[in-house]
Length: 125
Ligand code: SF4
Image: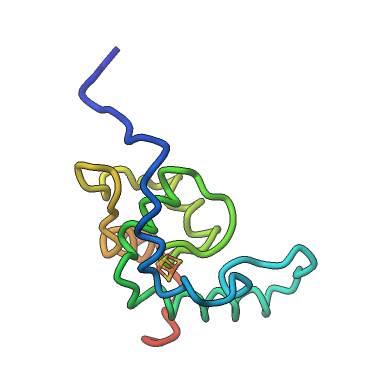
């Protein structure tokens, strides 16, 4: 077995969540209700969540957590469910720091953007 690469641990320290900009906000902005099948409302909700994430002091930790733990739902670290699926397909592990607890979100955004897969950020559109 090639031991040059060791995957990061699947559990992590959740203390960073206390510093997240979403900490005191409703989770409904970051997670879709089960009965929400509308694409427009989903996009608006995701755009609203991403606006909060973009200036979050623990965005790197949050993005890493979602990718490492394969979070299937919601906006984490400024990335939607669909964007995380695309990152899993195009690669994301090289964007983690040595501890596996922080992700270089700029690198991940560039990867999505270069593949034409990153939606314009509402604040930059
Ligand atoms: S990056 Fe977004 S989802 Fe993650 S802790 Fe910060 S505000 Fe919350």
